[in-house]
Image (cartoon, rainbow, N blue to C red; front, side, top):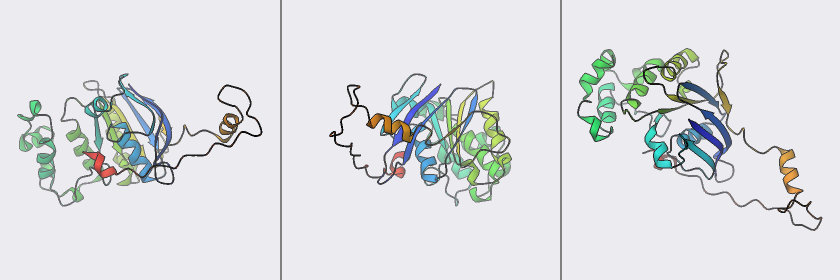
Length: 249
């Protein structure tokens, strides 16, 4: 199970990721919405163990160690992070990605037989930019799952390739509900599809409300009301933006 409580990442002026909470489990797809691409990518990186949060708690199967979360998860098609280069052919991308699979599984993972077994022979000679959105997602998720240790799939902004949810939603639902290999799937998107009635969350859903902030300011640390002479709390200066590219690999 993936558990996220008040996960937050500092930015230069504003939060790169405002406090966010969510939970999901194997066999389930959750859609998390966020207006800004920076927010969506920061959340995807944090959930997949590729960026350390400034505050909050993130755990996978009750383990909060970043290394464990990273080994169990796959980050898929994150813009500016690990999205495939457009000039690559499908065959070259497969060769490149399979080379990153842990050595104990690598022997049988040659690109030609992999393409055949996974039914991508028809697109092997195409450039990445020539793929339709749904075929692109099928390929990238299949490559992510070539590592048998992957149980958590985090997909960054699949809706940026098509305004039609049919281009990405059915594939992610099928992966989550696969009885042979049930996955916990998180898709970070700009908006929920009109017909979506499954699990959902919103980036920033754990930001303290003004009434909560006011109540906290009116109460001292020992539970007594603050006096009129008590100085107002001063927000610390936010840290510099983290380099997203540096954390991707």
